[in-house]
Image (cartoon, rainbow, N blue to C red; front, side, top):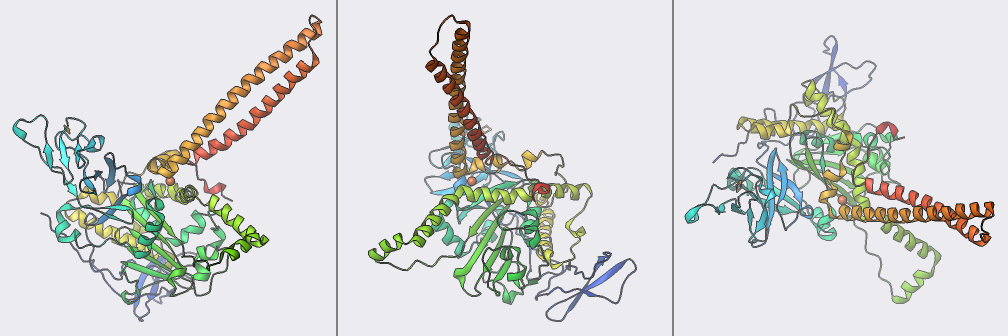
Length: 579
Ligand code: FES
Ligand SMILES: [Fe+2]
């Protein structure tokens, strides 16, 4: 049995640091030293390459660590591999985790999800191609070997006297907030996994209970955990990468004075790293883009909970939980250069409306302002459907999908690491912290000889600059096929399209028939062979015109439906076109 490896980071410090730009007097030629002051008065020194014409510049200290005492190897963690909503209880579900192929299936008899290596021990066919039998076993599709939820081989149909084959690895599973978490190192489960908590918080649990298991938006992304994590912890990219989505706008970009919180000030559930944004009402692009004024003391906390959770908590009234809106994100390193994200948008609780008598309710319906308000609420409810929410989330993840993949390519082809980043402002403080964490976790897996696992979170290759955009932003493969809500909407739209095509074909046929009748009638009249009643000619002309008009209308409707369909398949995202 492998023992959990806990390796302290080389440089561990605690205490909040407020990053301020101060130029050191000890300056090297061609470069300049930057001094970082901490709130305790201690000074850290870092060197940054010179920027011509730059008046002020802070360098995020790449050695400073806060609140970290030990980093587990990347696989000794609970990782979310899927939502329960995306899984099918009637069959095996393939999932990827840390470059490994796993299979998740529902054990009816034990009333829980099970996870095994997706590789039969006989001749290595994928068990996910098999089926669930006897309510708690997986049967391999190739020669029918059977495995229970713990991975034990229970039957080899070809073996005499009930002999069985080797087991496959079984992984511990927990379901939290509608996500299926897998402990990726079964050997360390008893010593470590059992006591390791999954970073789920009460507000999220409550929201999932109210909204149901479809509340989470899950999508596969064309870049790895290492790039996903730094992207999710990077507030400064929002106004630029997601310009035009909601109220985000490039104009909202500004300095982001983050302050790293010391252990004594961190949230109760103890994130590995946490920052608050100073003067959030005037610096947070999301607050600044709010359609209604934000109180001047509104706050924003950003936390990273290792290994997989990022949380933005915005509180309009400090101390009042009910005014908090939370963006909770979870990450899964699936394969090399690929990842899976889970998004929950939790809005502040609305105070319950005051109780009214029947008469008051009736009266309130008849005032024009109440009617207007009710109609507006109705229109909003029609617009903000779960499908709408998913399509908005796609827009967000499309916004950085392509350039993040290409960032991976640029880094790999030039042998660059996060240590080569130029991060002169405190906006990147969490990016550097996350990268140091993931690098340490990956290194610690390498020390155990688990190169393949380590590589999945710190790849040195595998990004491909020529990957078609339609593949990088493939909404169907990355989301729709797993999402019952979007699949249903897609099928409805496809059916609508088929019906429109039928109508169009009928109209074209009718237009053809009526125009032939019209031409024939006119011809005969002109030749004076037969006197065709004018009413018949007018009728044929009318039908032809109506059919042509109908065809035009159905073409327009079809184009609209095709656009609707496309939203579930692929939409390109070109920043230069987003004005
Ligand atoms: S490969 Fe699975 S039973 Fe043969
Ligand atoms: Fe969806």
